[in-house]
Length: 372
Image 1 (tube, rainbow, N blue to C red):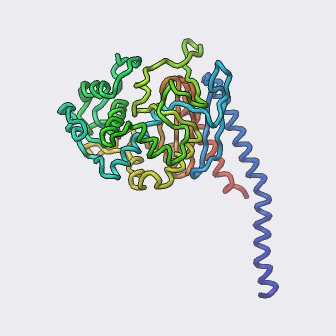
Image 2: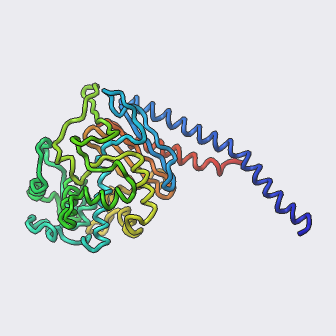
């Protein structure tokens, strides 16, 4: 190799090193500025919304970018929120129920188009027209808990099923979309009937343990749960403890889990893989379900996930609300960005916070390409 050839290799390498040396401080400054701006925003919004405690997760491509706690997990004891702090899921838990059902579908133990009467022989005749697919997508005609439902009665599973069976369908199955907690409650009982296991045990064995989600479990206020946050609500502007509900009502499949942002980072990472489900099954969960007229439901709901778009970015997400907790997970799938916000206030708006944080990181991701 002649001297010219050697220099032709060395000089580009030196130029690249110089460029990296020039850009690194800029990119580092951008990152620190974004982190500082995000922290300032979160603290300001917590003060504005009177949120006692909040946990924030930002991840890219399944790897943690930021996992941080703000404020207090327990106001009375002045315990700060940490990444390990355990919050209640609310309806964010529905995606785990849907995943469990899809596992059974892949194993040919459940069919998406099976009528519910296949699994509930004593159900009303109208359930013959309802499919598993429709329960998963909130298009089954099932509604929500009745207005006079007693959340302080310790219902048995059989009593809850009888309650659901006694409520007439709100509309012909597959003809419209209407969010239904009772539909997912029923899916939990279906999992129990098919597997012979309480659905929470099935989730523990098939999802939480394999993914190393060490704190995720069914709610139990009787058990000693390390790092458990307290839930709060506002009453005439004053902070109060969460309303109490009976133990059985805290175990249903419509959203009765404990988890932390660290566990949800493992969950998010797994969704980039086929550890739990085939890619085809995940894609089906993340596609708006079609009604019988062939149109997709207008609310953009798949199986346990909302599917939508924000400012040109495709997002799959879900919110949760239960017992003094408000939660949200938003996965900007094409950008491989996930934002999770967990709060311990019934009136909080974690979705608003998550959107703002996502915008910060989406904008920051564009900046390196704009450098000259």
